[in-house]
Amino acid sequence: MKPFHPAKDFLSLTLQALTPEQPQWQQHGIHAHWLAPGLLELRPAHPAANLEHILLSAGVHGNETAPIEVLSGIVNDLLAGSLPLHARLLVALGNIPAMQAGKRFIDYDMNRLFNGQHASQPQAAEAARAGELEQAAQQFFSRATGPRRHYDLHTAIRGSVFERFAIYPYLHDRQHNREQLMWLAQADIHTVLLHSKPAATFSYFTSQHCQADAFTLELGKARPFGQNDLGRFSGIDKALRQLVSGQPCTAAPYDASQVQLFRASYDLIKHSGDFVLHLADEVENFTALPDGMLIAEDGDIRHIAKGGEERILFPNPRVSIGLRAGIIIAPTTLD
Ligand SMILES: O=C(O)CCC(=O)N[C@@H](CCC(=O)O)C(=O)O
Ligand SMILES: [Zn+2]
Image (cartoon, rainbow, N blue to C red; front, side):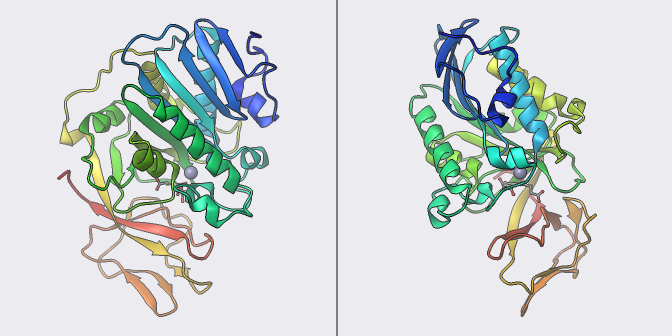
């Protein structure tokens, strides 16, 4: 098998729409399978028992470049033999045309097209790719014989009161996994939003349909390629490197003081072109909303903050009609 060309790293191959001459090859004790552009499966050539099965994704939003660089660095070090692999790993760089264009998306937000929603937007450039990512994830996890994890790495449009945070998809009847919460804490992610309903996101899809411990990770502010301070991503970089190389996890028993939890109360939906958000563009994620504050209006609908403990997440009045223009959240504890 022809080795991965060392001068062409995973990211540049993906951005240039190049593929290795052979889709499957072995190097440094790793069996690599290039499934499609930006979709690479790696496993130890001689796997130990009880491997973890880990999906790492980034670039579902094309302009969220730091997580793409983090994952590309991990893949390159695995293939160069400088980072050992003791897991089955699927790495997915999501929206390649949007990455090339430096945009969040081309036609339609890809993270609203999972869970089958791609079928409702067949004309969108993102639809087929969302279906391809779903299929790759399902095939990958269908062959899993041990723990399944999915971390979908993002950065946010706005700054944030809490710089890094995780989003835990709605679990229906499953319990929140406290070991996962402590793993996030040792990755320097101490704030977690618990979703309260199904969503069309990649992490909800793998949580619900692949039974993975799945999270969307928001790791900082979105910046173009070349403008990231990757030092601010060292917590997740180190934690993922330890995870894929099978180093013993140093996460402690569950300690509620390490994890600040919020629960989604309701979404601000943009129902029409009359939608007005009464928050300035500089307002950060997790900004507190004083009791009685008018948050948003849409025709006859008025959203008013209640109780003084609510906060705003992902305020964005520029989304397409029908989509979420923000989430109202409130502090919570585990059941
Ligand atoms: O900064 C923003 O306004 C959006 C950041 C972002 O892309 N967040 C994800 C969260 C996905 C989830 O709820 O799990 C998204 O909106 O897709
Ligand atoms: Zn994103």
